[in-house]
Amino acid sequence: MPEASTKPALTISGLRKTFGRFVALDGVNLTVNEGERRAVIGPNGAGKSTLINVLGGQLVGDSGRVEFNGNRIMKKFPHQMSKMGIGRTFQISSTFRRMTVYENMLAAHTAASSTWFSLSSRKLTQMRDAVMADLKTIQLDKVADQVVDDVSHGDRKRLEFGMTLAGKPKMLLLDEPTAGMGLGERAELFDLVLKLVEELRLTLIFVEHDIDAVFRAAERITVMHIGQVFAEGTPDEIAKNEQVQEIYLGGR
Image 1 (spheres, rainbow, N blue to C red):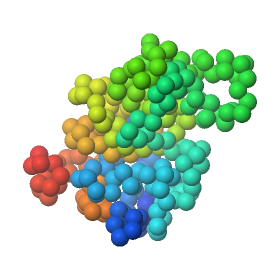
Image 2 (image 1 turned 90 degrees about the horizontal axis):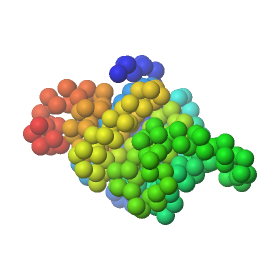
Image 3 (image 1 turned 180 degrees about the vertical axis):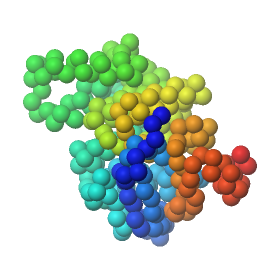
């Protein structure tokens, strides 16, 4: 894969977020360059998902500064983040499970084009080719007419990823993209994610507990602990860090 740019896509300075007396993020500083593949790892309660939720607009930080492509984003709503080019998936699949695979992807395209209130039959017809092309890209075109509840968990996660891409993001935030998936499904999903990230030249930030997937997919790894950045480096540097090995990687 091509190397990431040295131009920052995301800059976080002194980010703090509390829930009552619990400090979820305690002065996080982080820079991710354009086109970089960055993994965020750490034990439960380290602040990983809180960080992703602040970056996606689901939560608002208490203090600090967050910039995406030079624009401050910390107090923007999720739909505003999406329009700026930030797409995200969730640990628990957020698809419409009683709709078909095709209808889910159509909804994503419709939302991205801001045509919810003008869904003429002509516009729906125009979208069909784009929707089917996206389903083929994520290898779900053969189950397009199936209700989401009837497809595998892995296919639902794949669909959610494809729906995120419908918004044409510049940066992807993936929160536990392989949660609940078998080993084979995990590898297939990450192969697809990495292929499309490269083709579309996207910046990727992902939280993942599958350490093998992390070391295979990430260019740099940020290790979090009690709301702070504990360590940061390339996969080789993190693998050789004795404290990370002992505390987070089980002596890897």
